Length: 130
Image 1 (cartoon, rainbow, N blue to C red):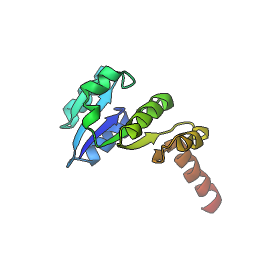
Image 2: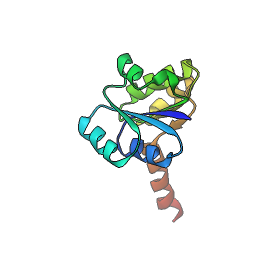
Image 3: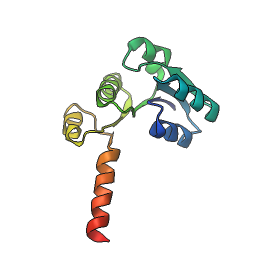
C-alpha cells in the first residue's frame, strides 16, 4: 500500500516508522526535519508546503492509497483530507482544536485523531478515577 503522510513532526515520523512494510512518502515543509527523517527512515521525503498542488504532484498524491494529514495546522489537514476523500482515498486527519471535530465529521472526514482531546480525557480520567 502506498501511504502519503503530510507532516514530518513527531507524529508523522512515528507513523512512518510503524509502517515499514508499506511504501511511504512524507511531505514536510522544514528542510532540517526532512534531512533528519531521510537519515532515520528509508522512505521518500518531499520538502514543501502540502497545500500547494505542485508539491502534492511531486509526492505522487494521485498514486497514494491512503493519506494521513498530521501537520500542526488544522486548515492544511482539512484541505488534504477533503482532497483525498474526493479522489477516493482513505484519509486520516489530525485535529488540534476539539471544536473542529464536528465540522471535520460533517464534511465527511470520519477518521480523526486529536492528541490534545485524547490527552485531556486521559488526564481527567486519572484525576477522577485514580
